[in-house]
Length: 231
Image (cartoon, rainbow, N blue to C red; front, side, top):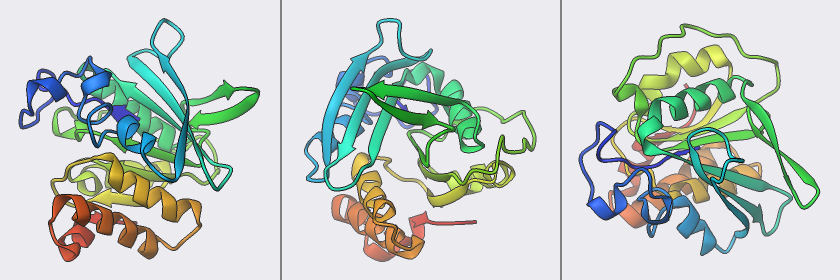
């Protein structure tokens, strides 16, 4: 779930107008810009873009575009939704409830049923930390079922803001953050490689930190302190 970067509707340090329009997936910082999820993974040696669907009435509310990728080595699909940046609260809540096994749905592509939302094995969030802008009002909601669900949250300080909520939802945080960060797609790409190969959380953390350092030049130690697994 990608909350499109939105200068007008999110409490962020403004980015250039061309990439900070939350209603324009094509150029958005987290979607169509150079290191956005769509643009970056299209160039990845590990993923193939299968389908792009723009919102003409069939997509969920507030989702402007949906893309489906297939891993080139393993039988793993990635379904990514670009949420209108003005609806970051709704995006955040969708992610939270999906992490607890709610919001279950299925996408069918060429006869293959792909579980999404709370039915997924891995649920990821990319974007601004919405809990910096609004309060979570639902208390400790128990998970919908006992199915294991891994999550990755790439946004600023997601571990501190979401720990109590995710504990209640009984999800497994493979990777989230302890400080300010740029939630761009190279970090997710690296982390997913380790997860797909069934590596340890320490190995996944190292992959993600190495990718973040490569692009942000922040030092590998700093990147490892920023991107952490577990509680």
